[in-house]
Image 1 (tube, one colour):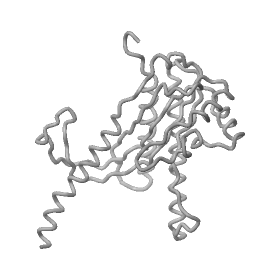
Image 2 (cartoon, rainbow, N blue to C red):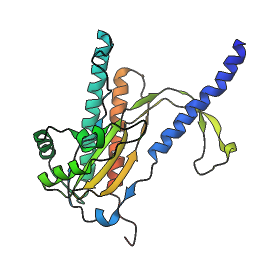
Image 3 (cartoon, rainbow, N blue to C red):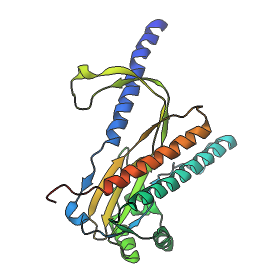
Image 4 (cartoon, one colour):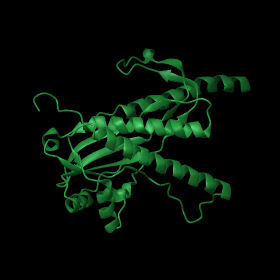
Length: 255
């Protein structure tokens, strides 16, 4: 009986890993949405750095001292990844003179005056229901945009990065729906960037751009906690550039 179970697991496990990888690829290739007409009228923008939704716990978290320390270390890593995302995104945006981005301190000062954070620019403070992403809070966005004198705000939300070990996975060609097209291949160890969903919302409440991106990066050797942080930092910079390139995309001919 044990041999039969092992044989079944050897088949099922790659399927689960493969389906997870297929889902990741689908997230990373989500189509961006543009309102080209209204986007063309946007010149001056404010950038609000995307945030990770905190892990909500009760007063008694049930964590031991060692677990709490590990959690704090993880939160520090996420905080540093946000800094990397912000730096890489703004640097990429500044390679073109398409938008004027107001200094970050200006945006942060107005949020602080209202006792708001980046989460307050989304409905329900950025906490979605299930796997659904929350929608922007257009009223709050209008308040900030008008106070700092910009045409629109760039906002976003993040889901945590991941590290994927080596193992078999299901492989398929996206263009081919034939189930016989699926095969099992060896998956290299790699990291996955924070999953980013970003918006540009005008002061009038129009969503003129929306995109969702992820990136992956081979795992460095030796595979230690230190190299994991380096890999996550590099892949976060990569996804930040992908988001910026999406926003800087020129309209199709005739638009």
